[in-house]
Image 1 (cartoon, helix red, strand yellow):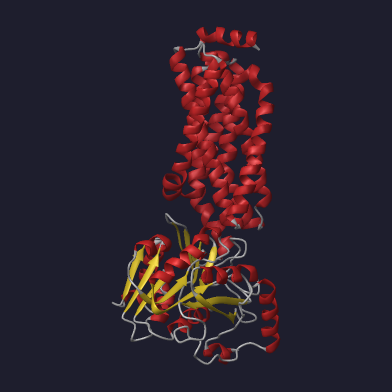
Image 2 (cartoon, rainbow, N blue to C red):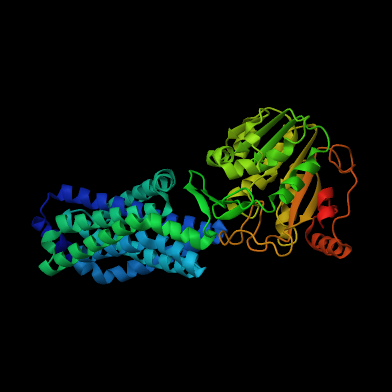
Length: 540
């Protein structure tokens, strides 16, 4: 091994640059390649969470497979150390092509094949193998350009690698994703990767290449960059075609904000569909069932000041503003693009009754958790119209700490209402939310309403592993919507709405089945109940 290292160092005189310059260029290539590699990882995690859902599971799959594959790649790279320069050049070209096109292929496999899990694992494995093969070859190359001991070379390589990973990790959410989007961002990253790897080998180590190897590397890198550039040029047409395959032919608005992807479908207020990160949040055909059931039970009592957390579409605010004695409504929405659409889009603003024109309404662009920590006002009603509790990104908005903040914001007779997910399809999630509200210091009264009527057909909702939010899953829709009404007073006292008569709304067999499901999962002392707005008994 020592003889081999000496032999490699002895060839430094053949390089076209000084040893220190060559060392700097190798480390710069390490930096760029590490940044690109981490962008590929984050791209796979983000797209898998978007297409498949359950971000924790998808991140675990991508990262574990990739780390395992990196070990395989390191072992395989031992065979290439005798041809380190050409091997590194070809590996970077392959990595640029596979990593740069990964998002495109994943999205295409989902849009037209309806399945992307196998492609996700395949890309994670391939990218991991190629990233793992980089370091052994770079270790050989850096010792080739500078007379440095192995320990120092390893320290320099890993320092450049880790700093590059930091830059790539920050560039993805703050630069690439908001400016270029997922697909174009991945393609651009691949082009940078190919250019950096090819430039290092073809310039610094060109004297180590045979004419045939040099032609091979030039052809490979130019071909990769040409493919990625062509894909970038066609990516808009691809996205439109893929969206039509997923959402149908009536996509009117498609924008990637700094928070999420926002899709509006339908040509008028009767056919409108709002998708956030692929999950159907609003369907005009049945949103009134959800929003009336969410808002009106909580409005039974003092209601001068109302706080809506989430609900940037303005539909919950529409129901609140029906009450003339409401003096102020504050809507806290994290994504200003949603509130902007709710104000300006003719179909969505028509559906929400032009709620944002009402002088009583104030819109705040902020994260609900952070905003509650800073706000010092008290509210008679707090309406939590937030993403589905099954979506990992919204976990903190269903925590006991969050409900503790809400409890502090409630007036003495204030009420809170929370969308807690479908109790029949996901009873454990529903009762976990209810238990979290009680842990936050509030008394609770769960209730539910039937979901979409039999035969209901919504806009396509294939993303996110079954959808979420108000409108739940796709196709036939959720079997029920579950809510929790809560307040500072004990259940049954004025202020929780429990004094109002509870209309019959479900058949006796449905009530018995729901009670059995609740009994299996509820905490001791919690009595399941059903409270339905009178309108739904008439419809049922």
